[in-house]
Length: 258
Figure 1: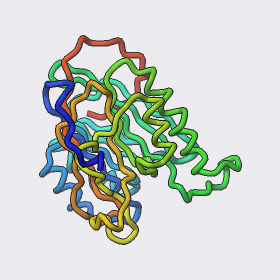
Figure 2 (figure 1 turned 45 degrees about the vertical axis):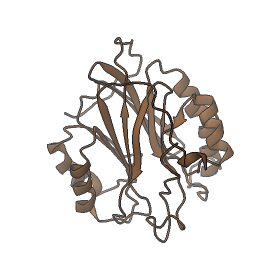
Figure 3 (figure 1 turned 60 degrees about the vertical axis):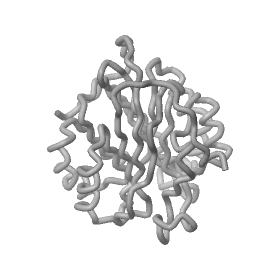
Figure 4 (figure 1 turned 90 degrees about the horizontal axis):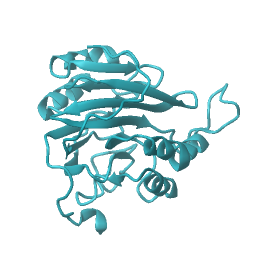
């Protein structure tokens, strides 16, 4: 199967950058296990989805190793970084989902990191959603909006998020086509992440949590973490960025706590 075929090494050969993505699930209370795993993995960026109260307060402990943070409570997204976050931009999709774009520099290389969470396939909207269905928003975001947004970014792009679709979805494929990104899991396996029963059982889980990267970003390794109380497994990706000239930053500034 093509997802398991090793890929030839190409692209950047710079400072490694670790990405940690975890949809904690609203009902999960295993805060200590999540924090311990991040401390063990020592990523450059750690992003948490569905992180409603008390997750933001519990995650504050990570500031010891990841001192730069941005909190988007309206999207239930928390991001922690080892590096200063130069710029940030938040885009909302519908009433409770969206993305945050973060610009950073590591060892002379610049990149835009996008953290996103799409509506699930069985979400049928909330009161005040103007009659739209959440899955229709998701499909529109994947087909058009996210790809068009990424095409305007001049820096290398890394997208991590719960897209609520697998690699076999036509909407996922259109996102890949429109954005020009590639799936970091290629060569490392299907890496299932979501199950209502046992996310660690590959026969009962599906791959909906993704890491997509620009063509000139080198993927060193991608893997899933252990079951720590969520319907989702953490996704851990190691990449490398090519050093580049500082490019013009056009994103709207937002407050970043440091």
